[in-house]
Length: 245
Image 1 (cartoon, rainbow, N blue to C red):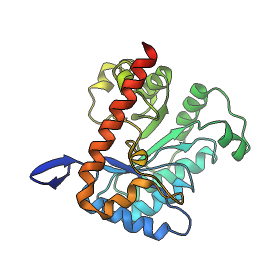
Image 2 (image 1 turned 45 degrees about the horizontal axis):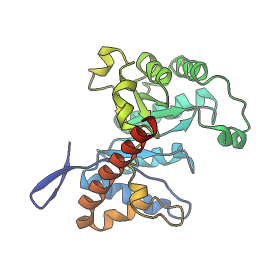
Image 3 (image 1 turned 90 degrees about the vertical axis):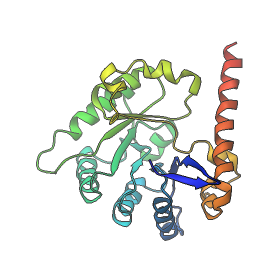
C-alpha cells in the first residue's frame, strides 16, 4: 500500500471519510484527486447528501483510488435501481468501487417514509434480489454494516466484506471469530473499521465539513493527526475495559 514519507519514516495512510457538502461539491472532487495523488487507502462516503451521486463522480474523476459507500441505506431506492446503478459504477471505475449497505436507524426510516422489517432478513432479501437481475453487468463487492455478531456472520455468508461503525477494538477479535475461517483468511474479504478513524474528533469541525479534511492542506501535520487517532482509539478501548470491569 502506498505510504506517506515523513522524516525518513513510511506511514501507511488510512481511508478517509469524505462528504460532498452542498455548495462545495466541486471542491470535494478536487480534494479527492489530492487524496488519490497522496496515496491514501481510499475514500468512504457516508449516506448524507446522496452518497450514490458522489460515488458516480468519484468513479469518473479518479483513476486509481478505491472508494465505497459507508453506508447506503437499503430502503432509499428500489432494489433494481440500486443494482443498475452499482453495476454501472463498478464498470466505469474498473472495479474500484465497493457497495457498503446497511439498514440505517430510526430517524432515517422516518425521513425516508419506510417501515423496516428485521435487519438480518431485510439485508438477506436485499442482497439476494441484487443478484437476481440479468443483463446489467457485474455487481461490485457488497459490504455489510455490522454492529453485532449475527450481522458479521451474515456478511461472511452472503457478502464480500463487513464494515464496523462505533466498534470496540478490544472486541474485534471476538467479533471476527464468527466469520468462516475461509473468509477470515481471504485477503479479498474486506474487514473495515469506521473510515473516519476518529480523525474527526482529533480536530473540531465547522460548517458540516469533515474536520480532518483540511489537514490535507498541511502535509507536515499529517503524522501528528494519525498518531492522535491511534491514541484516541487506545483511550476508547481503555474506557471499554473500565466499563466491563
